[in-house]
Image 1 (cartoon, rainbow, N blue to C red):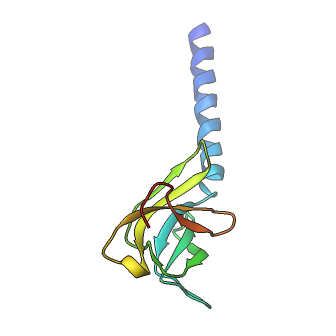
Image 2 (cartoon, rainbow, N blue to C red):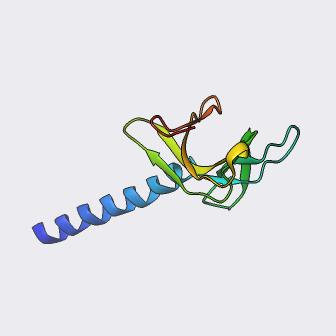
Length: 113
């Protein structure tokens, strides 16, 4: 009897976890691409819904090419990082930080400008 109760508890826990995952997934994923819409920039930051693949422009970036680089997110600091190039130095890749709340983009501290 103890074994079946334990199995039911594990199954209930697994079900609860599977039901909670879609709610977290709807928070979205970030992606970069070409800027779009009014005031389109060279590139933009998009929020992608992983449940249906739709994307919405969050920020346009003027004078920065980040549409073909990588993205990383530091959950400890809440910092979003992107690789790309400034329009003035397109041959030089650099690391940028992006403020998700304001859309401010800046070269990573310590990087030459």
